[in-house]
Image (cartoon, rainbow, N blue to C red; front, top):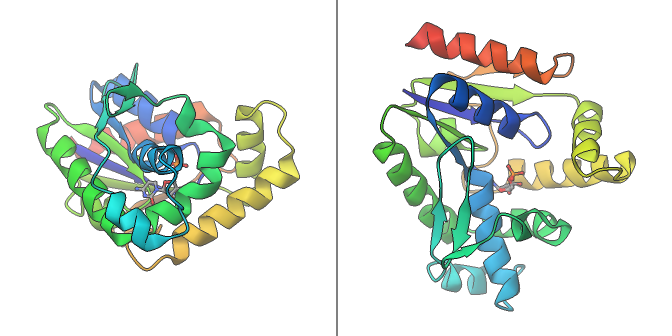
Amino acid sequence: MIVAIDGPSGTGKSSTSKAVAAKLGLSYLDTGAQYRAITWWMISNGIDVDDAEAVADAAGKPVIVSGTDPARPTITVDGVDASGPIRTEEVTSRVSAVSAVPEVRALITELQRTIARSAEGGIVVEGRDIGTTVLPDADLKIFLTASPEARAARRSGELKGADVAATRQALIKRDAADSSRKTSPLAKAGDAVEVDTTELTLDQVIECVVTLVEEKR
Ligand code: C5P
């Protein structure tokens, strides 16, 4: 059972995907964390993330390893725990530039396919292009949406007191970059089920996705 969950930031993708995987005994992969990890490595190694050629040349250097336990997802870069540093504002504001580089996408996509193929018992994979590009044969594809206001409010809550208006602007900017890039942009697969989470609580979204998975089993 392979479940692909895509959508823009702040729609509850990570919380939903982790909870659904835990409830149904499936593995879990956060693909955004992998793009964040490679971005963090680029910044830490003095590579100009706006120089696509430099990013492409360095893309194969870091070794990124994702743990797939939904109760304790982990990510390491060259053996170092990167789960804290990949969530900084600096990484968040630069990840779209790095993830738009085709060489980066090719490497990370291959890594994602290998992890999904080897997950015994099935996996929930969350991201932006999972249903369209990474795993087009997924058993179930979900596309989560929510109004920009709801997404900004959720993200500000997560970032504890961050300015909602500034968060909304940053979200819109990142989604626009992710949706307009040439290589596998953020998009809903033709056969994905769209769930608008604007008026739903997290528990309701989880319940809805669990039901959809159970119908497929
Ligand atoms: O999901 P998260 O917000 O952590 O993703 C961070 C960034 O990683 C996205 O804004 C996007 O640029 C990139 N990403 C991507 N493809 C995916 C998952 C994430 O390009 N499948």
